[in-house]
Amino acid sequence: MMFETNPAQSAVSVPKVELRDISKTFSGDVETVRALTNISLSVAAGEFITLIGPSGSGKSTLLNLIVGLSEPDSGEINIDGEKYDRRADKVAYMPQRDLLMPWRTILENVIIPLQLKGIPDAQAHTQATELLPLFGLGGFASALPFHLSGGMRQRAAFLRTILMEREILLLDEPFGALDALTRRELQDWLLELWRRFQQTVIFITHDVEEALYLGDRVIVLSPRPGKIIHTLEVALPRPRRQGMIALPDFGRQVTELLDALGVAI
Amino acid sequence: MPAEPSNTEIGYPRVKNHLSRFSNEIMPPVLLIGFVLFAWQIFASRSGLSDFILPSPSQIIRAGWETRALLAGSIAITMLETILGLAIAIVFGLLIAGAMDLSPVVRRAFYPILVASQTVQILAIAPLFIIWFGFGLLPKVIIVVLICFFPLAVSTADGLASADADLVALLITMGAKRGQIWRMVRLPSALPSFFSGLRIAVTYSVVGATIGEWVGGSAGLGLYMLRSKNALATDQVFVAIAITTGISIGLFLLITLIERAMLPWYYAARRAEQWEQAGIY
Image (cartoon, rainbow over all chains, first blue to last red; front, side):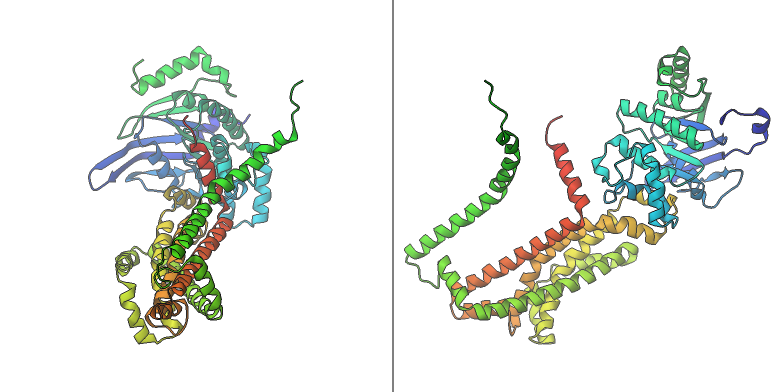
């Protein structure tokens, strides 16, 4: 079994992603914003972490730091136990907006990471075309993005992320803009893909149920300046089933998270 | 017995769409122009106004036909100046827009000068070019370049700057180099703006060439217009007006066609948006 952890082994294994005492402040002309303070987090290989917090708690800032779009003021970020100058080579980042290029077909959009690696177009096409059906995009290779529904566009964006071929995925509210039904459908689909590709996932959401349903561990961030105020080891078996959200156990954990977030219960 | 579902019923909406597009979009302006020309013809022939004050449409057509040899040569010259000027303006406009996008210093240096240059009266500086460069092709081409350069440079620069910053950031995380970001994101994002600028430039270009010829030319539609005016051949002045307008419209349509062929995604997406917006949800 893939995610059956061997206690002896995990004790010595190096965390896939390790944040040590990260702080980040943005100095603007008008005000100085302390986005994150003293964030320490260790993510094991193959773990699915969900990160939840109110708007402005620095969730996206944290992902930008991990991917290397900006650098922390203090603290360090290690991947596989090492400090890399270009962390972007190690992680795949998927922002909330699908950011598909409107002038490229779906196939041409998803092969962008392959093109940037210098893989010939013909080979990139073959590689991507094989994966299209798995992403529910079979038959849409030559469609333009505006032809597709929000859910399909998000799946295309996700395929583009997968084709970056990295072991770590940073997903910033990928289902935030979708309707409730499509969202549930994509949650199950994402878990299935995760089972298959075995990446380490850090998933941002502001939906408590989504955080619980997807994650092995839920990390709760405080309002600005963001710090970790609660960690919950999710007590739900895998594979997850949508029916689980009706379990008393699920409800208890939802309450625990809402409580941590300061929502009146 | 129920009415049989006839073929006409199925075929009807399609035919109706074609018909309604024609009657909605093309018929009204055609009818209006036809009516104005008809009224003009009646008024010119019945009012007793002298021909050199207001020639009738039929008289203008006759005047054009009678001077067709001279007109053909003039049109060729004016078209040559226009096309050459436009081509050079496109090259320079794209170069400056690219330089402004790559370097903020270049942008700060050029942008105000570009805007200020547009407030200089072409009619005032056109004679200077005639003095400096003679009565030939060159001064007219320069005037066309000056007029067309601005909308092209500014709209293309704006288009390049409008590239989605999030998309650029995403490509950076994928390891894209600056040149790749340019080719994959900035240039395609700039194309719609470039074409908007080009459509404006094209409509000005014929005017620019004609002004140059009017101020000091040895050939072309501007000179034809000037000579006709001096000879009080008002009908020929109208001929020149009609032809310059026709050339402008023709070029405009040509650019629009090229644009539609080059940016199918842009028009398709815009049509889809219009569909989505049509209605209250």
